[in-house]
Amino acid sequence: EAQVTQNPRYLITVTGKKLTVTCSQNMNHEYMSWYRQDPGLGLRQIYYSMNVEVTDKGDVPEGYKVSRKEKRNFPLILESPSPNQTSLYFCASCPVGDPQETQYFGPGTRLLVL
Amino acid sequence: RKEVEQDPGPFNVPEGATVAFNCTYSNSASQSFFWYRQDCRKEPKLLMSVYSSGNEDGRFTAQLNRASQYISLLIRDSKLSDSATYLCVVNYNTDKLIFGTGTRLQVFP
Image (cartoon, rainbow over the protein chains, first blue to last red):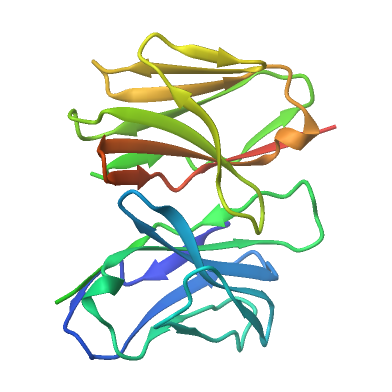
């Protein structure tokens, strides 16, 4: 089954404790992206990647890191989480170059930073 | 249960077909409802709001059923350019906007 998976789905942590949210897709998509969803603000893009070893900042990259060592994986790293990073995070993927293709979303990761 | 649930699809339909998506929400206090469209590698864009009496915008019709807590989007005469992910969005109060994870539509020639 074609899908985007995220882990963990729920996470409670404390300020300053490094964490990683994994994202994996099994569709050989070149493009992957991370979004955060906050009340009243909708979905905002954090980082995206056009292919392996190619990453770029989105609208709200501060406080986050990403890496794209393999095509299927695009982990989101919070080196020193803060309470303002409490949010719902979505990973997404789609192929590059096919205008008729649509975007796949992961199920979401709900993060609470105390 | 998720706050907003959508069938992820994909819905694969030929040009000219009519296709309908449903979305269910869990909080009966929800106040307003929207459909967004997201294209690959782009930010979501508001497609249309959903009103209690139902509303239409060209080939798109949105409906709300408060009793059953679902909203729907109907697309008539599908075009290739309608291929996208459609996001159901529910607003509980003035500062809480909840997005579903989207329903993918693929229109083929």
